[in-house]
Amino acid sequence: MSSTAAPISPVRPGGPVIAHSERQARKARRERAKRWTKTVVMTVLTLLILAPIFMILMLSVRSGQTAAGTYTWSFDNFTEIFTRTPVFTYLRNSLVVTLGTTVFAVIIGALAGYPMSRLRGRFIRGYTLSLFVVQSLPVIIVVIPLFVVFATLGLADTLSGVAIIFIAGSMAVTCWMMAGYYDSIPIELEEAAWVDGATIWGGFVRVVLRNSYPGILSAAIFSFLVAWNDYLVATVFLRTQSNYTLPIGLQSFFQQNATDWGPVMAMSVIMLLPPVIVFAVLNRFFSIGGIGGAIK
Image 1 (cartoon, rainbow, N blue to C red):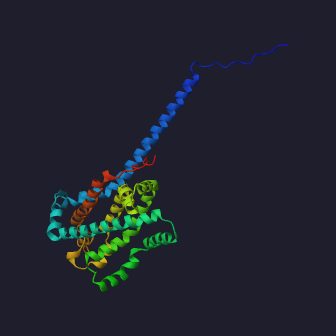
Image 2: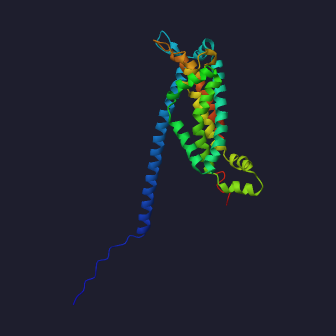
């Protein structure tokens, strides 16, 4: 009885090691391809987002067309807006309304967001629901009724009246933002302060509020942009040129049959500067995870 041995396949020296290296190399190539793809996509998206800003900057320093069909580059458009319109008055009014809105909206949001975060009950649920409902209403619905009421109270065509509307419009979101940030702060930190003799108000100020700077800045920036960029409310309420804000002042350069885009873009640059400065100054104060290990 004869038996045949099964053929034995030859084994390459170092075969498993080589196969593992090849897999690692393919994985590394895929990771590099993903990184390059993400880089290209993000670069394209960034350029698309920044393209309008580049266009505004370019048109703001481009003067009229010459006889040769070319354009000259100068700051004549900025000179024109400073000589033709009271742009400093518009800027001052916008800053007064915006800063007042930001300060009061953040104070109200910081105080009202605390019970929304820490308390539970039917009243709190109704309060938060009412904020959501109010924020869901379009501004155009309430502008005319508010104008009638404010005219009766003598607040129409005043910066304070516009600021009150901006505060009310941004208050709901600031309350939600602050409540959401308070939720990320462990209540054990407050309990430790209470054990050490702090009152509820003292624990809120010394523990919660002190660790909520990023949330406060986020709410402040939101309120700032709401007031700074608004056009509808300011157009309805402000009738005197001395009370105009920058968005209404920008409208003065639009004519019925033609638009001089150079001064329009120069005014747009003026409007862009304060938000850019605010973001550049406050960006370094944003941080996360500052209290992550506080209760360990």
